[in-house]
Image (cartoon, rainbow, N blue to C red; front, side, top):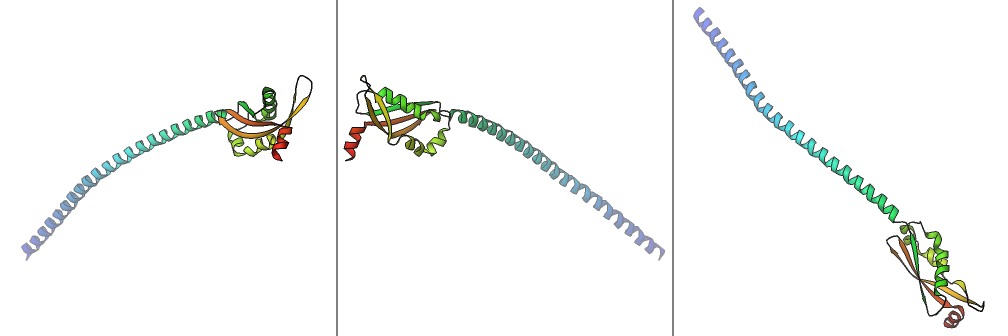
Length: 175
């Protein structure tokens, strides 16, 4: 009975030691396997952080370029010059009409191109049925009626085409 008991206790100890060695071996294998997985995940995370930082730098660079372009475009979107073309059957006074129209629209120099292109009726209101007077050599004044025909924006130049008719002709054509 004593040897059976001893045999049982030795077997029990052997089973317990084998169990603990198996447990330790399993833990080591599991640690190595999960450690390798964790290392690959940390490397992937580092690569993603690096790629994210590169993209953020690129986004910031592109935003700076857009800001520069917007500032450059804002300065070029102001009207710097006004060019007037007179459409008329009159053989005289076109330069004088042109000068008077330029003086009428001179306040638009320095204004935003988009503001004027969104409100073209403003120019039309200024020039619609506007009467200007031309003086000839005999100090006789001729009444000229203006009509806005076309407007165009070429870079920072506002180009205006104005139709000019002598008032007597305009009255006859309306009847």
